[in-house]
Figure 1 (cartoon, helix red, strand yellow):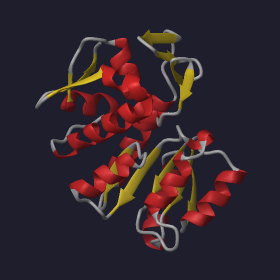
Figure 2 (tube, one colour; figure 1 turned 60 degrees about the vertical axis):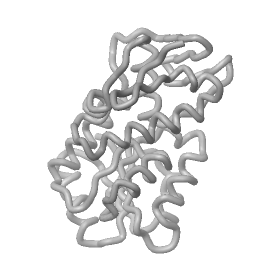
Figure 3 (cartoon, helix red, strand yellow; figure 1 turned 90 degrees about the vertical axis):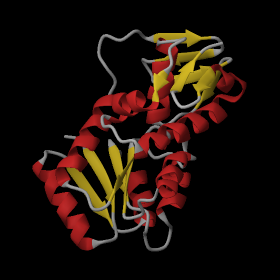
Length: 225
């Protein structure tokens, strides 16, 4: 049973999501603010986190910054659930380290679909090769870690999957829509901008090796030297 941490200050929404997660065989834990979430994360391990942004006290994006700043939580799958649904707000959430963004209102079926897809991918695939390399980039898929020039680079789950796709298929340009469908499990012209945000953050984390990720205007991305 996958353990899910829900951070949602609206009691009705929190109760509704908790009820449906229970019905879907998850183990949900609901808190109404980010400070309580930080305390709970010290006591328990979670498989994924659902994060509202408009929280009392410590705001969602500030909480996410704190979370991603700790190595042990860097790859914890996070889905933002928020009434803030402009393109700029979605991109800001992705840039802060969220793996997915679900604007309110949404159906419980959509939430479950996204959560299952994220957990399935974060769990890895059986029978895969263990190590992939391209130039100074090395991916150890056994421990899900990335190294550049021998130095470990901490990536979020989505950043890891994006880089692995590029490294395992070099010299291939992936359209944004294909990346969104492959890694997020859905398609939306509006949300293809999330790919741009992930690639931008990934390049920065890779340092000089980030220049290996190429962009083709109006098309997409791939890795090539």
